[in-house]
Length: 156
Image (cartoon, rainbow, N blue to C red; front, side, top):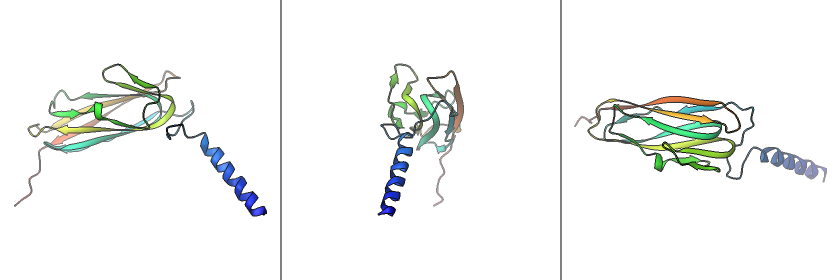
C-alpha cells in the first residue's frame, strides 16, 4: 500500500509540474525571462522543384515572415499556405506580410511551401523572420537564404 501512495504522489507531482509548461493548444509556454530565438532552413532547390522552409522559434508571441526574392522572381513562398504549430491564439494582424500572434509566449514551428519555376536561373532568395514578445520591446530578426540551382539530369 505504501508503494502505491508513493507512486500516486510522484505521478501527481509530475503532472502538476508539467501542466504549467503547456497551453491549451499543446504548445510550450515560456516566461518573460526566456530568450527569443529563431532558426530557419536554408534549402537548396532545383529549378522546377518544390520544397518546404521550416522555421523554429523559441519564446515568442509575434511572428512575421518576409520574402526578399527580387532577383529570383520565379521563387514563390506561399505564406497563405503556411502551417503554424501551435496555431496563433491571439489572431492574425491585417498586414502584409501577415503577423501571427499568440496570447502567451511559446515555441512555434512554421512550415512555408516553396515553389521554384522551371525556367528560374540559379541564384539566391532571402527571407527574414522577425519575432518578438508582446510584453517587451525586444524584437529579433534573422535572415536566411534559399539557393536555386539548375536541375540535375540523370545520365541515361
